[in-house]
Image 1 (cartoon, rainbow, N blue to C red):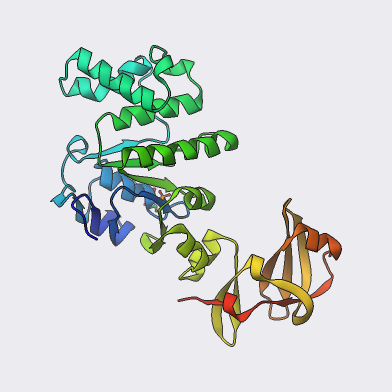
Image 2 (cartoon, helix red, strand yellow):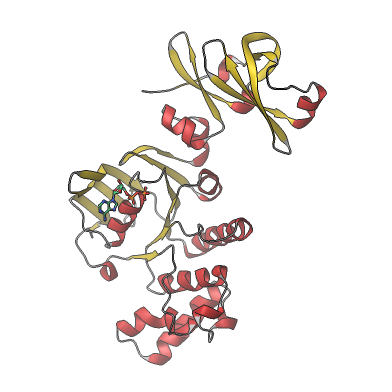
Length: 324
Ligand code: ADP
């Protein structure tokens, strides 16, 4: 269903001289959803985000929010807000004043803006540190402040550019749960740029995979992961092999590949212990590399070493045809 607070990109294009950074993309974002823009470095994710935010001029196309074309409005008038990777907090302002800053710019009186800033700091569990300076905060705390500062403008869409990349792996997993909780609580759309597949799968209601300046595939994480449309998506999302059977290219999940007495002859080329599973890499006679993910118990009942001859098999139903 089309709702008035949908965000829509219409033939959105960005050129830098001869480089096409974003090539006429179309996308309708579901209202109040958590969307991850995913793709390798240089595919156009940040440029897309910056165009939505208004930090980058668009070359062609339109950005429509709540039925209104916002593509040429200044950032503060769009109904969007952006949280930067570097957080970009003002070092000379306290936490509270950082969060209240945009309200000050709008000429809102001090009592109101401080009350509002404290509400937002409450939301991100940072009210107790409201009088600290940014340099006195950890990375995770700075990020919460940056979030509060972006949210104080009551955006319809929050744009996050690699928001977790500066955090250590442990904190990253904690913060991503926080982000998801916030998005659910606020019931607004979050568009989160990442190059991490795990992050996108864990967070998103919708994953939008970009490659070479275009959207390669978009959908719920489970659809994109388990039914990749193209070889690029299959390889980029991971957990799949790409195999050729009777001249047709298929994706097959690594955990659906079986080793047995019959099947396609192959030679083991690598064994990687992953804790709950063991990844066995093998080269087939037709020089295709296939990874089989085996439950660790199954592997250790019949351990393999590089050089061992094996047979690879799978049920037909796991073969998923790919488009060129
Ligand atoms: P991503 O965020 O997916 O890593 P970007 O959107 O940053 O990709 O970049 C997409 C393409 O546009 C790349 O080829 C990049 O080199 C180019 N690009 C990005 N910003 C600029 C710029 N300011 N000037 C020239 N080229 C740029």
